[in-house]
Length: 443
Image (tube, rainbow, N blue to C red; front, side, top):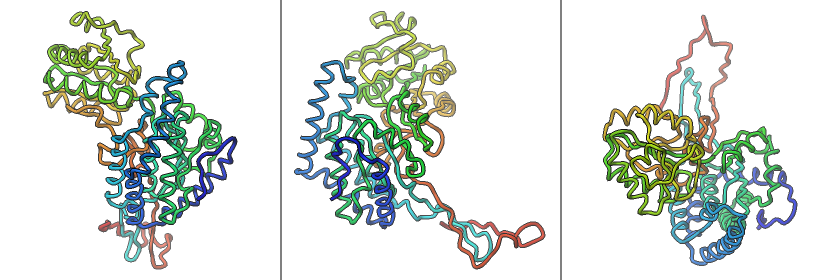
């Protein structure tokens, strides 16, 4: 089997990309049931005891090296937190891939069928983008999630994971490549890049690469966007807020706040700030007590500290900051409009939530917040492809074009217009000529 993993030194990224693109055409040519069987095969491999032993051993090597780097101050603790793989994570990924395999086929099923005239029928048909390049952080479970979405959508992928997860990513990509080979598709359909300079080479592949997905901090995403002529879908930082309205139920607010902050503090859908208004004092008190019990470091504005003087003082730099840890900033706002203004100024357009018993206030919030995901009486941690029923996600897009929020397989598709006729020519139609029927048909 031709392996794209384990390259030492400089590699020819363009040659790898062309091989991946050719393999992607094989993948796209498979029937829907065949690609579903391929996904189930990958899911089964992730649950196989022998494969799992290899994956966990590779991850253990990465974690050991990362711990040493963190102890030396060379690695952010939040990145170390994202690095670990365990049975529960692998079970979740396998379940997501099985879920993805069970979803309806996306390719070749017309979204629209329209009769332009008798015997002249137009269809809008979903199709793969082609070759997708994904640069992602030190979360090795992202590799099979992204790979699975590409398998479902018929796209080939160039994957560039964080160097901290090199051994884990190698093992996971090799597992997917073995599955591809078993199903008659060239393993190059999922190709792993390993060197930092490979990113620069990948960004120069306009005309070969159809989309770049950049997952990382704000500055990294902006750097990628400035460095290529290829379309870029950015998954940047998650500065998420929880607004506690005066009508909020205290127990509900505390439960949601704890889940949104403590469930996985390093996740991009964890909250980084809690906003509250006059009348929400009881809910604030419940949140503060519950969060402190979970060991969260709370930083409050002056008016929050007037009620809770035990909190550390928040500064301007705490607003709009992604901690990725058990730290939360709390601010008193004047009212809902003030909360919306704060979110507009400091949020990252990822996920925002309100806790409120007042449905009118909640609906105003849902309508007004400019973010990919906006929730009412629910934790921001629901902003996730697996939890949305997408099987997995290639990232959470905070932009507004093509795809927004958790990007599943459908976000990796474009479409073609297919027209079937019987010799008709455009010059026969128009004012004073033959009229179009423009009659929509069942897809």
